[in-house]
Image (tube, rainbow, N blue to C red):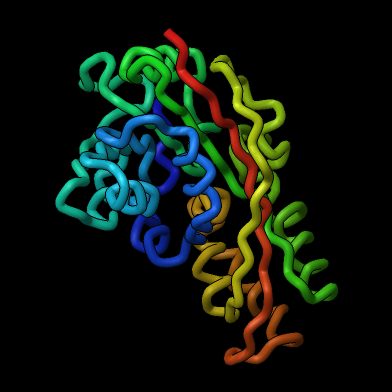
Length: 248
C-alpha cells in the first residue's frame, strides 16, 4: 500500500523544509557523464528538480501527491507527473541521473531498484540522500527538543523513520556504490520557522489525527522561556547519501 504522508501539509512542506546545500549537487554532478535527462523521484516541493533544471536539458519529476506537485517549484524544462517510485511510464534507457531527496526510505526497495535499472542509461548515476534529526545550538533548548522528538512524538513515526535515524547505514542498496562524503546543513531560525518545519513531520500529522491537538504548540511554548519570538538560533542537520553507478 502506498504511503502518502505529506499531502495534508504540502504547502508547509514547500515553505519550511530545509534547502539542500550546493555541495551535494557539486558532488553528485561531478560523477555524471552526460546532462541530457534527469529524473527526480518523489520530488516533493521540487527543490531538487529545480536545481537540476539549471544543469540538465530536461528534468522529469514524479511524486504520488498531486498536492505536493501543485506546490512545487516550476521551470520550463521540468516535467512534473504523478507516478509511483516503483512503476513509471518512462522508456528504458532514458536518464543520465536519478535522484531521491529524503524519500527513498519509504520505497519498496527491490521494485524501485529494478525500475531504476530499467529507466537509467548505461553508466548513469543514482543518488539518494537524507537528513537526520536536527540539533539546536543551545543546550537547554536541545534537551527539550530531543525529549519532544524521542518521548512525545517518537511512537508516532512510521517504522521507515528508522532508516533516517540510522543515517541510511541499514538502507538496502544494490547498485555499484560510490563512496560519498558527509555533508551538513546549518540555519539561523526563529521559533516560527522551527514551528513551521515541525508541522511538516508525518509523525506530527499522525498525532493530530489521533488526539485532535497539535503537540508542536506545547513544545514551542516551552521554548519561549529561552527565546523571544524575534530571536534567532542555530539548527544543524546531518546529511547522508547513497550514490551508485548503474552498470548494465
